[in-house]
Image (cartoon, rainbow, N blue to C red; front, side):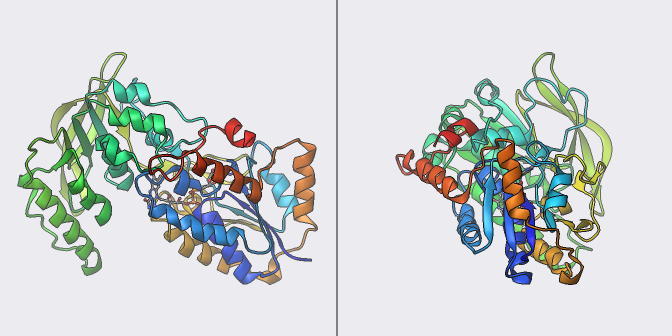
Length: 431
Ligand SMILES: Cc1cc2nc3c(=O)[nH]c(=O)nc-3n(C[C@H](O)[C@H](O)[C@H](O)COP(=O)(O)OP(=O)(O)OC[C@H]3O[C@@H](n4cnc5c(N)ncnc54)[C@H](O)[C@@H]3O)c2cc1C
């Protein structure tokens, strides 16, 4: 009897895990279960619409999906359509790869004020996540924006806020979000980090491209330089030096005729959202950084703004019965093992860090630990699972049906766009 495996979540971690399972168990029957009718997780719904080459990784996932024994089971939510307990009793192995869908909340007074928009909502809006929260009003009413966080997601958001219509034209951005961003009146975008420029978690390409924007200029305080890197080990030092060179070059730029200033601000922690009924500003506390740790100086300042977007990380959405660590927002595990026959990979295992390729290493490590001798066979997982979903009238989207949706999205595209995504499940199922 071939090993039956349920992989829960069709993001990078899920695909890499399925591939790793096939390497260890070539005859395995693998169902990749996904809540949306479309696969690829954050590659489709997180990676910025202007970073099309990054999305080419889906070609690797297509090849994994085409392998014998691998099936896409889309439009099935574990927790809603099938329980975790049921999966455990039907499949020999369960691999959880549900990522982290919930934003880490900003816990300061006023964080619920209108005009504070989570990174999940904002990214979901421009990336056409099914049944997204419409952020058009928040953007079109804003004159300035503050993005909190010093990672690549913060840079993605700031860059898209700063881009012009022509820069957004050949992307796969949701067309209405694209129009709204292109006509936005925002002239000042502040990206704020708790620690200094040496501690920022920006990748070099994402940081550098801020210098190439059509109608925006990055602004960095010249007095931050030179930055002391004593005590930083050699491997980390090279990356930091590269980023610092870019930041220092930004500090010498002049705005000229450019409409938008994209301020990269460091050593400041959000203290309070200001505004009755709608955000009018954000109070921040100045920090000094000692040995990489931010310490409050006691000095405060205000940035007047009408849009605040915290991009400070993510947590997993708990699934009933799946052991969950409330403190970290991760699925509880020891080296990727959750319990007998259940493993976790990707962001759900290690938190919202690393690039797409990190999930490959992670999945191989975890799946490599599974000892074929100790996986007890339970019976015909795949057919039993199908019968269960049928009995519940769940409208499963398989790989072929996903390809039909995929082609329909591409055929909707005009003017150099690669695709126009359907932004709701009903439309996808209708196709
Ligand atoms: C805004 C943003 C931009 C990014 N940009 C880049 C980039 O440019 N380059 C890069 O290398 N990395 C980027 N990353 C990081 C990269 O996307 C992650 O490393 C990667 O997607 C994590 O893979 P994952 O499979 O663990 O999670 P995900 O990609 O989130 O996949 C999880 C999947 O599980 C599904 N799921 C969740 N719950 C259930 C359920 N109950 N039942 C069924 N299915 C479920 C989800 O729908 C999703 O498809 C970005 C991340 C974000 C948030």
